[in-house]
Image 1 (cartoon, rainbow, N blue to C red):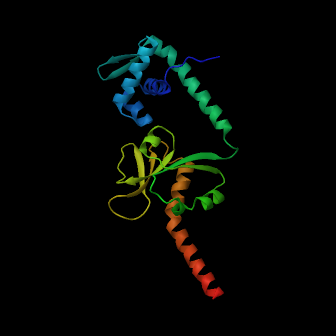
Image 2: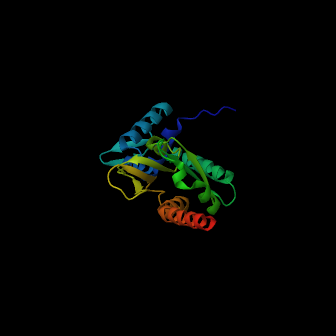
Image 3: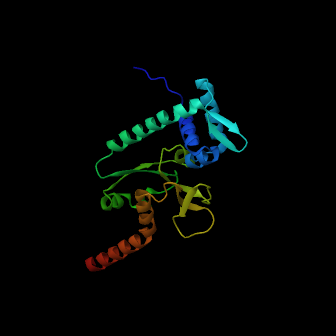
Length: 208
């Protein structure tokens, strides 16, 4: 059976806007602009041939068709999310990490992170940038820049001024356990690396 479906991004824009009754709040949730949400909804209405919203002055109201459509679309997204969650290994939370192309992954100690955090299934996409984060291809991103992105939490990886490497996560998910755990790991890395260097020095002295 072939399913005839509207574009997924347009459905996401409609569902979020309908829940919030606001293009602005939907845009914040989806990490796009209100204009982009409005365009997606307009394209969906054109595709379906029905009006889903009444656009009044500073107010958004669902039409009768929109009220009928919303619970079905929301239930569809919920079913997809639940089915996806059931595919994950038991007890493991999948974390998709994006990293800019010029970053040396050895700095992160990923093998040790995986060994000490078996509850987090870490996957890395490199190169990756803000586009991949906005599109949902990664959950958190290490990017090079100044670290100013409205709607996102930005944590500098090293104490320095000007352009640097930042850990960037959407504000809505920045404090979830797997992202918090990875952020804490990065924060403690300098101490871990310093301890490892001291241990190597001691071993070298003993052997000599």
